[in-house]
Length: 222
Length: 215
Image 1 (cartoon, each protein chain N blue to C red):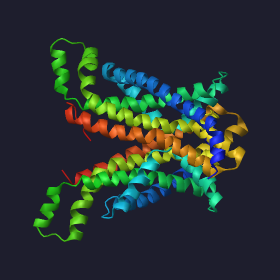
Image 2 (image 1 turned 90 degrees about the horizontal axis):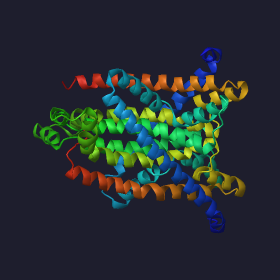
Image 3 (image 1 turned 180 degrees about the vertical axis):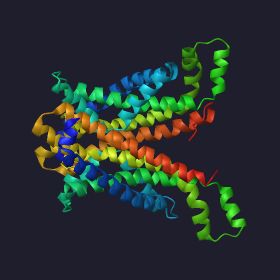
Image 4 (image 1 turned 60 degrees about the vertical axis):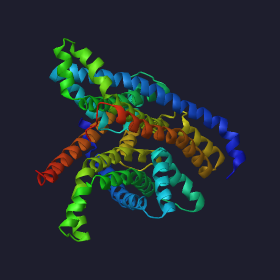
């Protein structure tokens, strides 16, 4: 291991790491908002909205994230819109996250017995109130660990923004590697940084899952 | 969509390679994953730790970085793969870690009472596994296994980064030649979606056949 080389390039790698984290966080927050909107539309919007949104979700989940990033980046420039790599990556990751998160929300809602919805409606709550104040809060023991698990996946998926030339961790590592001709060291350091980000989170997911299940009302129907 | 017919052969070749990669990586991943799952139940503590460490390291690093390590890193220590082989090896390793977890969960899904029942009617160890344990495992694992295969089909698109001429790469090559970006990317997305919808439908049908025996 050429430690001097790694130390010399550490600032660059850390800057790439920051971009990776930033990308994952922004996509997670906007993906959650969009995912909630999709779930609300599917639950409250009637049969047609449910079918249409379900189809959109299936298309996003049925095509590779890499292709989605290219569609947004190259597609936008082909129709005369120039998006920067970061904007394109955020857009692509957010849309992808929204599709998967909306399925997590839907699964969570399905884990709450229908009697809760009936009870809520029978005491005069609106359907929106039933969803937001009765069903969703009770589904948190199912939703929260799944969302955290998804975030770990998102952190790793940001590496696909490599194809847009965005200077996130993987691209920075590859650039340093090409410059220094030290592929093994650099790649191991990059992998180690991802591991240090993801592994503690994975342990947190395990603990949270066990705790929330122990005291939660909802149970995942697996 | 006329572009789809115009370059039908190119797309067909790309699609075929994508499926071949996904099938090889799924088969290899199942094999390594099964070994890993067995190693995780070993009586020897170091073996258990090694297997658990392998799963944790693979699951907590990006597949793209794993591909780079195999394609660009390993040649440093004298192990050289063609882009296609590097992709298959990387996806196999990546799959194996996830499948090991699936197998572990599958084994845990066999109710203890079933084993006791099998013992009480004096089934042999072999009959217990074939008639009792395996069907329970298969039933419990089936959705996760088919889902993992579909994820592998989608994830094999990272092959484009090292120049493997799978579906995404052949489309990008066409794009650089024709500049018909919007059409080509639409066709590319549509092909993946049709493929995964078909795979999902097929696996649902097969799953229903599996369930029939239990009703």
